[in-house]
Image (cartoon, rainbow, N blue to C red; front, side):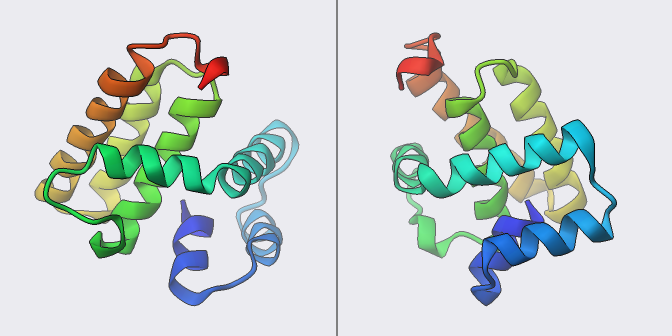
Amino acid sequence: MEIVYRSDLCGDAVEDLLKEISKRLKITGANLSYLIRLIEELIKNRKKIDKVIKKNLKDWKLNRLHLLERAILRVATCELLYFPDIPPKVVIDEAIEIAKEYTDDAGRRFINGVLNGIYQNTIGKNEDRNHL
């Protein structure tokens, strides 16, 4: 989430952020492989991810969301769409846990509502996420 947030905020190169953050947090092995895969999917599918989020926003515009909320939604939506090995409930629960650290109650409820909408409107209708 920090990579997505800082890239949006400062325009820093994702590759540089990935190196800096993985070194600082000592991310290695399978965790680093997962992080790289996640960032690659986010970059490759950014338009589709944003389109899915936008479809599930009610009375909001994606560019008007708080940067942290937008970053959490992008990461979780990427996982919902492109990581079929992770159960949707786990993705949503983890996003809510991250939101607990960085947003208020309204932000958590908002993220929960959007992600549940994405699940119900996109994933739930097509459980085989490989074809999205």
